Image (cartoon, rainbow, N blue to C red; front, side):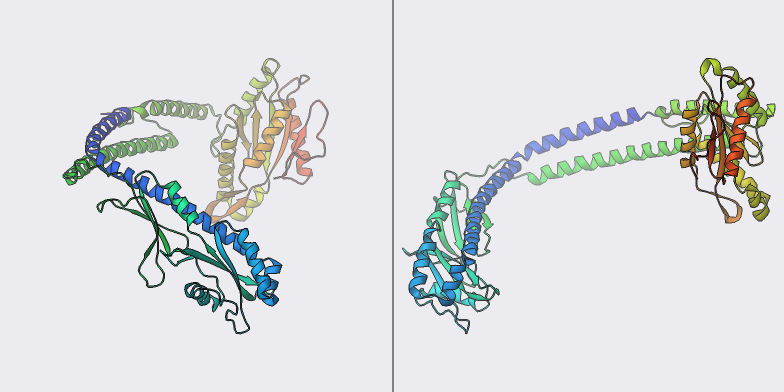
Length: 506
């Protein structure tokens, strides 16, 4: 009994709709989870925006300090400048840095220590002295937290032309720009804390904006670029609570629905796969029968959609078998190559010649396989037969269905390009040269390099009999053989014998 893929997949669609309906109902019961996720994502986005703004501000300061540190006069002042000259330069640099409270140019002595840091407070001195011993600039750090002079320090290394450290550029920045960034990004009712953790000391709150949220309100923490600072955000909104108590049952309901859906779909998949495999096996049987010259009346099919295709292939196969049998009965087929023979060629050439005035001229290509006798002499007649069969099969794949392909005898083949004038036939011969295989396998693992010579001509208005075009094609073939073989020569009836040019060399 045949089945229909349409019916099978309509069943699949119905099952999917039922499952989606059940999943939708269960999803309705989990709306609180979706709302909670949305709330958390909104809080995380707010925290990320504020953190990005602060990171951008720190990055801008860092780039500006690096540009200043490369100024030749800064390098010169740290190497040879007086304290008074450095103070003037410090004031100049401070005016160029928004939010800067103080700027220091700290020179290194020959021992690598800081020789001009007497005016720094101890925390700032420790901040710059530790990394100074390694020649690396320190990460930004808050100092004097909670005091009127609270600030954060940033520093960069100043190097001479040989990239040797000669000192540091240290800047104290006010906290107000950071506080402004937090205030601008904080939604109404929200709360943000900028905290710092240095070494093994407990984290300290540096900037706090907004009223502290309730203890059960979860906060979102974002790490800032220096890894010592964190920004914690708590929304002023209360997360939604909807049907929280029975989530496990809703999740189990969804899991059960999807399990049923997967099982049913798998069963349908197996049925479809088995039906397709069954029909493919029937197709293979039909082609095997076609090759053996007999096509059955009926081939069992499992899928209705394949019936029309199989009926068409079966009918065409039956007609092909009948035509081959008819040709054999009429003696028009070459037994070895399974192509038309000379008698078939002469009949078709006569028919096309008689209709050429009404339907246009046809062209004839004579083909000789090169070194065929050598194959017989070296490898035996079985190898020669295998070459004939292989070449015939290769030609059959390339020529058009409307063309006439025959074996005239021995290694001589012929193609009549039906209703193709000489220019079109020339293009078809060029395509033949390109698409035929370079090698043909023979018996006992022997591979023969395929080389062939051709002569092409077309019918002409002045021809009195079909043999006229055949004679010209044969003359072109002789010229091609004299020209070295593995080429094709053209005899144009309008311009005379073949020119000494090659169409295409194989």
